[in-house]
Length: 437
Image (tube, rainbow, N blue to C red; front, side, top):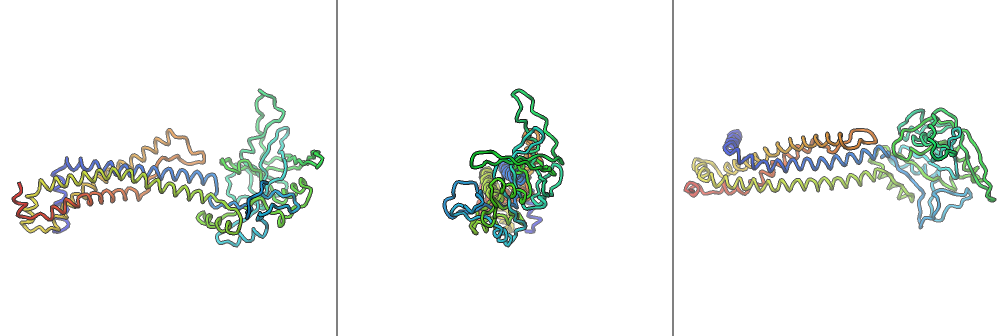
């Protein structure tokens, strides 16, 4: 039997039982739409989670801290007196560590990051602020790719770049209860006073004032850079030496932290593992993303399985419809065989009809599932809070492969469901079929 004749016969047989075919296909429609909607929901949640994380943290970044071969001593990491009193068991971050990490494959940047060892107050007139001061050994912090609200990313001596939160958190220490808060100063391009404080062994407080020019302000991103004031490492080192009253030797005392950047986000985890094997502590947001992706892959499988249950129910309906069709058309089958139809021809006809029911239901399910995804996104964009890191809030995301997969899967469900009834039809004895009442 030619394929075109087989196809024409299948369509004719399905057209004779439109009501039964449509009622059976409705089950496939529901199952297919459920699979598309639930998997799209899981993919949408995954994209929302990972895109928000990208907005918060650079996925190419690896943060490196001193390592411990024994139980860590309770003290600030890298906080030394400048006299070599590194806690026992600590593997410190030295200039040689920087060179060793730079030699790792895929590493594009290694830079130290050092905190201040005492109290520092940033003052604009009578207003004060307590930023998290960080020294970096960079002429341009643009390599961190922090979004900028204004100014430049280059750093020279006597200059600083502050986070968006810092720029909006100046307060008046003499403000009385009930008074309105003061207007925030426009500090970009202004020279402010940074008051450093240290205490002598006798408990006497000594202040030192340095002038610092604010040359850049980073945009608020709900991340660590919001509360940071970046200055040059050599300047911060001089301030720390004044506070501690001794010289700092990074070969002996080590850095607080190193920031490592990978060439590609996919390499960040491997680099972090390599640094950990060197004896240091390393963490990267990429490992968090991989954990999130693994969770959502499981979620997609679970959601897809829930939708597949509906297709299983539909499969039972297809099997029942095909079984009833064989009983009703037994004499027709016998007549077909009597005029020369082979078992393969009969099997192909009934399998084709079962596949047709699955295909029709699959098309309806794809249309409803895709339309439902778009509707959910419209509802989400109207009633759900907007993404604070930019972009449109999506409830679902339907990749191009999902409708195609659902359609093929629905058709396969139809074929598998009609396999047993079709085999029964193909193996009927023509004489017995012709005598069937």
